[in-house]
Length: 262
Image 1 (cartoon, rainbow, N blue to C red):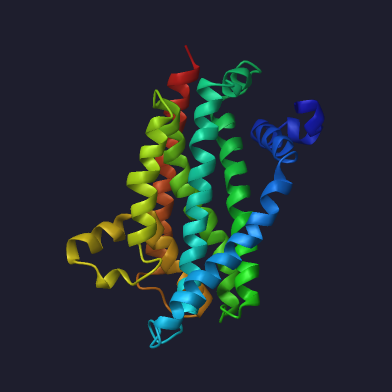
Image 2: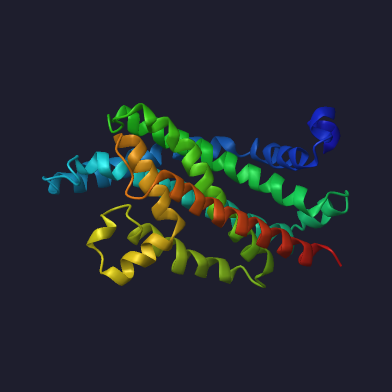
């Protein structure tokens, strides 16, 4: 793996791990390109244009389509990050045991985690960039700050992927991964401000929405695409997401070490 990656990459083990995942992705990327553009088009048409036709007054002084788009980009980043951090990670422990081969290479636990997380962020970033391009064609971006959406969703992706790595590393069965989507991803997508303002929720549920990483990503993305100030401070949002990412990194590294080092 290191020889194919080149001598420069081989000197940085985490990049060698990233190269391993990119080599695998090189065989499957064509299957995802079509959906990367088709899904945003269908979503924008169905929710933004279709449902938006019934929201005549708009939301927050803008059309429903323009208000909805940044939430859809953030939720797509969340779903891509979760999809790449659940079954792929679990299978590398339980089924194909790729991590066991990597730790025997030998690679350090931190390099294995960092390299795979870097691949997850690559998937999140490319998916978000494709979504951003499609929505730009619909005229739903109103500020040059819209380019900041990509780094925002990368931080959001890291904030959810890192702790999910830890979860996927320790669960005994992939059935627990389905539960994670059912009781975490779906409620976050529905109630974290993607489709309607969080302020319309009862106060207790509102604070639960504020506690999710997705709401912070949605608020930052919406501020960037509309060119307005976020509901919370930018620094507060970034620090909150960074805290999730840092805690997730520590948990993931510990879970990997317990599972791989005898």
